Image (cartoon, rainbow, N blue to C red; front, side, top):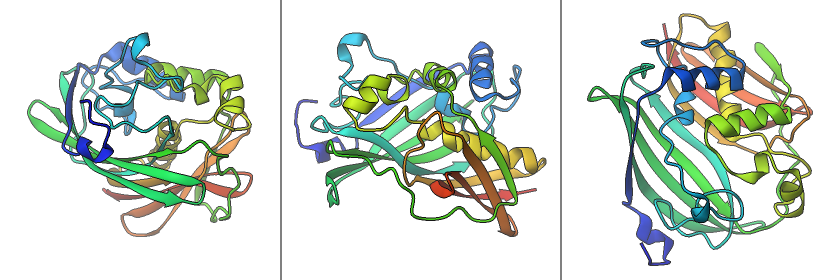
Length: 276
């Protein structure tokens, strides 16, 4: 597609098959410090982000390490990319070791004026199917911002938690998660780039990794509960190697709030529905 009007990408589609290889699942498990599933097991929640990846050759990568925009996603005028949040319905578990497919569509492209310049909001819908059955339905919100100093300080204090885990985001942990998700974005592993080009004081923890660890903390403390929905959003980046917490509480039946915090203020927020 050659037209440079971002709204012309609405309706653009992509398909990506994956066999949910058990060897790759073992590598994902090591990257998030969790137990590896075996063939036939349910893929742990949010691990599907480490599968269904359509990689690009080096010559098709931009300076930031992401694929050049203008393919599946719209052109974004050299803006910095952020994964802002999303919504997921978990209908059936994906099973390790069996063929599956991701079907994706650009649902919306909207430009807004923010406090630091123009923002391009892109909404992408994904359906994950296995054996002809829809297993996961998802919408992701991606934001492209003009180069500007990122927002680093939190303004909302973390709530009182009913469960909590401390996470040490070492450079090795970030590198491993970049590797298993085939994520070339340099903010996660290239310290000179992240400081000198994108303006962060240190390596940035992946939004999907944070959400995965938030979900893991819930499932560890609520065995037997089946998560049915997730709505999440990033409020500010988490900077490595400072320790952060993934935590949550449930004050109503079948609903829980999850969050990630650093230095006593919120960075990521989510709400889940569950049953069981």
